[in-house]
Each structure stands twice: as structure tokens, then as C-alpha cells.
Length: 196
Image (cartoon, rainbow, N blue to C red):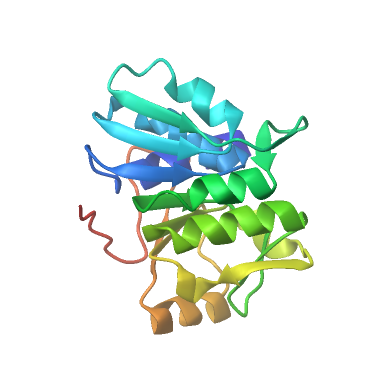
């Protein structure tokens, strides 16, 4: 689903202004956001994702800060107590997170408890939190709870979510934006204005 993830990443990046600080966590869709930030200026990106760090290392006006922790070789993610302690040192403007599974009741889920703890710390230490996830996350189940849709500012995906989930987003004031892969036109479910 690389085209879908690239479209989600590109749409999310349009809502991140220049000159801000942000967390980007583990995941291929969050990496798509990092790729789409290449035209941004004066960003400070804090990440526990070595792939994100490598993608943004070539950007001369982007400061990249890498969290310490235990390396998960399968995806370049860093987790553990050292990662949690590091993240707690910051308060950033934006967080871009992923999830392995999204329940229609609004629960955001994952498989790895250590990764869940890092995602929770990121949410706590960000002023705005964007979830990026493709439609397949609604067809999976995972046991560990990251949080709830109410923890989000916006949700970026590639297909309209289930009605129950949309209702929960609306009730929580969470904007939902749907990207159309390989299309210059981006269709959004609601208006989501980027604010610094």
C-alpha cells in the first residue's frame, strides 16, 4: 500500500507548518510523512525511528534529534525506558503517530507494549497529535491500547473510515482527512487548517 501511504503522508505534511517542532514515531506511514516534509523549513524533528532520522538527515534546515533506547531491528524503531525518559524532556507542537489497529469504538491499538508506552508519552508531550493510518488498520485487531480517538487532533487516511468511528471523531472534535492516491486533488472529510 505504498501509494496510499505516500498520499496520506503528503496530505498530513500539508498541515504541518514551517518552523515547528514535532515527534514522528515508528511506522511506514509515519515515514511517508517524513518523506513529504522535504520542502519544509526550520523543523525540529524528534524521533525514535531510525528510518525517519535517515530520511530527514539530508534536509539542511531540519534539526533531527534521535531518541535512545533498544533497537528493534525489524523496523529501525527504538523503544524502552531510555526512550520514554528522553521523550519526556520535550514539549512539541505536533506529533505524528501510527497504530497497528484501529477499533471502530475509537480505540487506537498496537502489538508491542514497549512501543505503546512510547506512543503514549509522545501524545502526552505534544500540543497536537495527528494519526496517520491506511484503511487496513480497521480490519486488524491488536491487544495493547495506545489511547483513544479523543487523544487526537486529526486523522489522515486513504478511505472514509467506518461510520461508528467517524461519529466518534465528530463527537471528539477530531478532523478526518481522506487522501486520494495518485491524484492531484485531495478530498477531505472536514476542513483541517494548520495552526502554529
